Amino acid sequence: MNAAQEVRRGNLGYRVRVAAIDELATLVKAFNEMTHDLEANARELETRRRFTEAILESIPTGVISVAADGTIQRVNRALMGIFSEEQVSKAVRLEDLFSREDITEIRYLMNRARRTGVAGTQMELRLEQGVMHLSLTVAAVDERRSSGFVLVVEDTSELLRAQKAVAWHEVGAARCAPKSRIR
Image 1: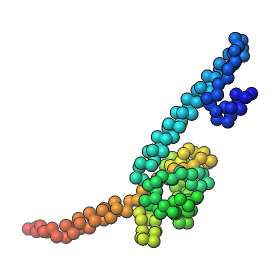
Image 2 (image 1 turned 180 degrees about the vertical axis):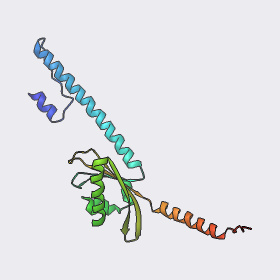
Image 3 (image 1 turned 30 degrees about the horizontal axis):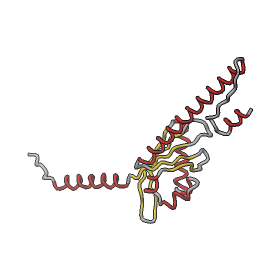
Image 4 (image 1 turned 180 degrees about the horizontal axis):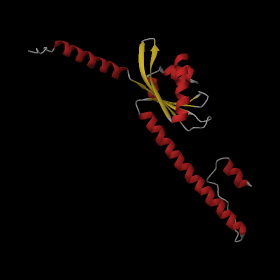
């Protein structure tokens, strides 16, 4: 009884010590093997969690983990390059980061991602210092209604400015190029 309570509390290193050679010994051995396996699995899960955390913190793209009801569960550091640190630290729901119109679009993407796995769009985020162009990708954790989502938010403002500059350069080059005469 004590052993089960210890394991229930999370003490997976607990082992039963009984000097027996009958069915009780077999049961104790099986219990100890089970807790050993659970302990090894818990260590493996913790290693994977730390690895995933390291990846999320090292990528330059904002990531938001969201529960099915829109509650923010986790964000990475890169999100603070898009929103202010204060805004991100106080955000509890997506509504704390995005406008009502953007939330309507994000909800649509969530529903679509639930059916297809992933959905994305481009959007403009209006800030005090101007407009930021974002690429937003929503991935459903799975198709169950109770599961959450991962939102990947990338600032594409510089990319769009560069594309516009190239396009205008090409327009200017085309206007300045000598026209060939057909005779």
